[in-house]
Image 1 (tube, one colour):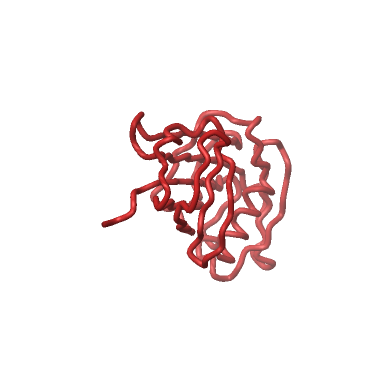
Image 2 (cartoon, rainbow, N blue to C red):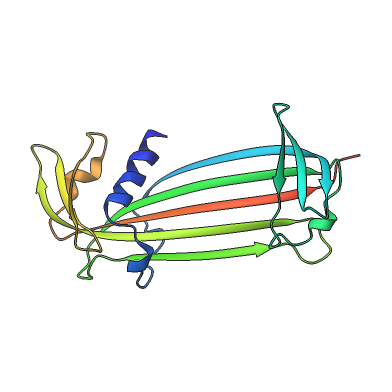
Length: 192
């Protein structure tokens, strides 16, 4: 958990602005170090108001809460009392170093899938952001590296002793960070 938080901070420091988007870089280079975290939450439908588009759920710990469901949620009328709702959120961060003459860049891709008409509601949304930064300076004694991001910003970062690739890092290399978020929600009938 600590690594993903630090790595996301690095990505933010490099200037993860979607407005700087250019062509996507390779999403998972062979030498990438990856960190993944998944959170799954389950609930049972206690009540539903189709006209107001609200659903009352009971969570795994017994907590009861009501949600308003937007018009973009298709097949809402197929949700029934007693149905099971599962929400799954996954974060994946891959960081790699490569040789390249390309300028630093940032790109973002998004995709969404939904259930077919007549099915129980479900859907998945995926967002992938890739950022590259050029290594401008390395201080091996202090274990610091200065990176120039896609907006021209220069950041100096302290590199932990557990990062073995630091010793192979050279000025001019590119650091590629690919951050993917995936959110999936499914509704299934009760078993039995």
